Length: 502
Image 1: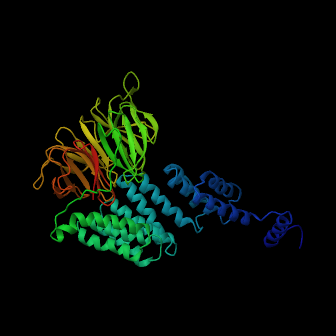
Image 2: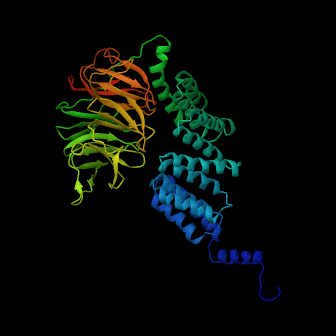
Image 3: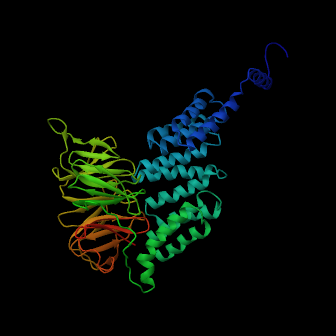
């Protein structure tokens, strides 16, 4: 060599030799080991250790081919585990700025789209999400993220009620990427969107395809649940048979001191939860009806389970979310005023809290930390009996004055309405409303012991009489919930028992 200059290739060889001689792997090999370690910790849900590995790569080995992988995983953590859109977006954008030509760039665009889709429920969020999904599809046609972007495009179109276009996006997944991990979900979504189009019989055919093509998948289980629900509501009438529910005699939850002052019954993935207002407790049963636990509840007024499966109690002064109390205040001229007459509360998938205070006569919306965002959907006074959240993130409200039910989008727009009486139904005393995983709405009438069912567009499907619900078993039903397959869990105040109808 001439002078003191060393060729880059020779320098790399020399450095590798020196590191090896000292017993250290070269930076690229160390980065690979940290990445594998981080992924393993992540899969074990040991997130602190996983983040340590990923951060070491980003901060100390940023010039290796594994740095963009590490940034992608950090962003995924904040999106999927912490559900922090600001932090997740920060890391995905950093990936695109530092490694724009890397093989993880399409992944960053895909996840940026998911950030928009999950964190912004307004129309602008859908547009931003679809723009990023299209970047993946058009700029990186050979990337494995294309199937994911197509499936996510379908989900964004569903959010906008563009069912035909959503089906087209999902069909591209199963036709162009039949072996991808997204194919079973796409086939399931075709069935879901077809039902939303108003064609439940064709939807059942599409759902059966999930079971035929992907019998071992988790989506096949969901397809069976949806099939059961649709067949009961539509298939039986198509065959000339009435829609009926039978009492499940195997389900016999019981208490030594009986049930008393039951205010509401709600379901989660783990079981059946019953709020006894007078005894100030929540009873937790498994799906077989066995009592699992009892927890005290100070002055409880309402019970809900959010999309994450988290149980939330409303009491006079605030909320108790997964066991953690949260006091709620509103600003007034003389300083913050604590709410003291909360009777209902629900939480959306982004963590925003909707509460009804009977003193204020308003629905109030708070952020996840309990900071007031304003009245919802407006500042009008109203009296609310029940509130629930549908799968699209719409708040469903049963009002006491006229016993009507109204659904409001996250922006406050009215997207559905059910009157006390219509051309083909009439309620006497609606007392509760429940929404299943497919978006069907169930309205319980206490005085007539009947049930009205409406589709996800809030259009009438059927009215089930007392005889259709367990052959007249129900006499004074006051609260209900519904599971994925459309099975009903009803508390009857006269019988003082929980009844499962399937």
